[in-house]
Structures are given as structure tokens and as C-alpha cells.
Image (cartoon, rainbow, N blue to C red; front, side):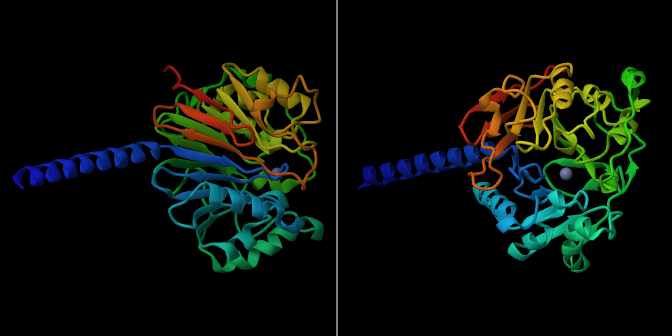
Length: 359
Ligand SMILES: [Zn+2]
């Protein structure tokens, strides 16, 4: 009897130890910042899941089109297996339809705690260009909306999001904790300005620097070529040695200027292009010549350059040219506080591990 009791106690102790071990393994597994790049066919929608479980969606893809991007965003939210079916923070970087297109319909689908945008107005009032803003406005009127100034942080737990551009204003002090931030940038003399194209709304876009321990990511949404230079010249306010640069303006020639990209010195770039939007010859040239660049991941194969210029197949999430009738694949990046990260191509299952950069 006594022997049986002892073995029951021993067994239950062993089970408790095993359960505790599983629990701690699970916690370790979740000690990452997960970033999902949704394929919105040359729009933008990036879902961040913090190690604490809070969520931030950076832009909402293009609206309409039989809910193509809405469904894709919801599918990725499902794949992310969130502890709570809600979005804690949604950034609407600016009011072009490829970014704000699903802000209103998403708010119908699940609770959104906070919106962040550049204010209750758009410079583009032509009816064909203001539709996405007009759809968002009624939701915006009722929602909790914050218009952050450059230098402010998005109040998300578990990682750090600093706004560096919003509503046409740029950060004027160095981003804290970024290596090299505030130091002179010798590449500025090579800068060649470009005339702003006829879509002034981009000028007001919200851009951010993301930090998770030693991991650093730069995402300026659709900010313009000349503003990018202002951010890094004459002193580089953003800092250098980014792990990841999400290409500005979908990898088109309106942004992603070399003075910015090469000052940021990313190890990896991720491009939110479509088969025909972005992925231009100049974008490939600028990214591939960036010092220290290891890989260039693409949401789509680019038809604007040769197959040889595109990254190898395993670094491309979608290879179909059809904009709607193909299964949309995402890229998932998991970052850890030591600065190491993994990128997974959901289409092929290919993943690549990037060890922490040497200081
Ligand atoms: Zn855009």
C-alpha cells in the first residue's frame, strides 16, 4: 500500500516536472516578435504579433475586389493563432486605397482597440482617389484614433515602435537606442533629388522604426524619396545596422533612395510588390548593392526585371502573375531579442535562419 502511494506521488511529481518543462518550452517558443507579410498584390498589410500576444496591423491592403485582401488578412490572423481575436493597434499609414482599403471593413469583422493615422483629412480630394478615405472616415469618427507626432511611440507591449514620420513631419532627434543614430552620414553628398509624383498623399505617410531587443526593422510605408533623404542627412536620425528593411513604396522608383537604404545597412530586405508594381531594376540595384545585404525577400515575382534579377524562387512568396485567382502566400518573420531571426516562405516551407549580427 505504502509502496503504491509512494509510486503515485513519484509519478505525479514527474508529470508536474514534465508539464512545467512543456510550459517553459512553450514560453520560449513565444518569446519572439512575429511579423506576417500579407500578399495584397502590391498593397501593404503587415501583421505584428508581440511576444506578449498584443497585435499591430500596419496598413490594411486594398479594399473591394470581392474582399480579396480582407480575406487574406483574416486568413493570416487565423494562421497567427492569436490568444484573443482582436487587433490592438492598427496603423493606417496614409489614405491611398492600397493601404487604408480595408480599415472600415476590418472594424466590422473584429474589435480594433486603437487606430493610428495622419489626421482626419486627405490632400487628394478627387473622387477616384479619396474613396478609401471616405470609407474609413465614419469608422474613424467613432474609433479611438491617435495621430502620433514623429518621435512618439505606438503604445504596444513587448516591443518598441517609434514613429519617425507622420503627417508630413519627420523626426528631428535621433531614434533612441539605435546604433549610429544622430551621426553624420558621409553618403549624403551622393544624393540626387527626385520630383514628387502626382500622388501627394504619400508625403503624409507614417513611417516607423521597430526594435525588439537587438533586433531592428525599418518601415517607412510609402514615404517619398526626398523625405527619406531628410531622415538620414546631414545626420542619420534613424541609425544604422538594421536587420530588416521593408522596402519603401512597394519597391518602386518613387522611394527607396540609396542614401537611405545604404545608411540603414539592412541585412535583409522584404518587398511588398506585385508582379507588375514595384520590383523595378533600380530597386534591385539599390538593395543588392547595399553594404552587408544578405537576402532580398519578395512577396511576388517581379515581371519588371529578368528571372535572374529576381531573387531565387525560395525567397519569393508568390510566383503567379494572376492578381486574384491564386492562393495568396505570406512570409513570416520571427525575431528574437538577441537580433537573430528566421524568415519562412509559407508557399514552399523554405526557411532561413539569420544569426544575431556581430556588434
Ligand atoms: Zn502604396
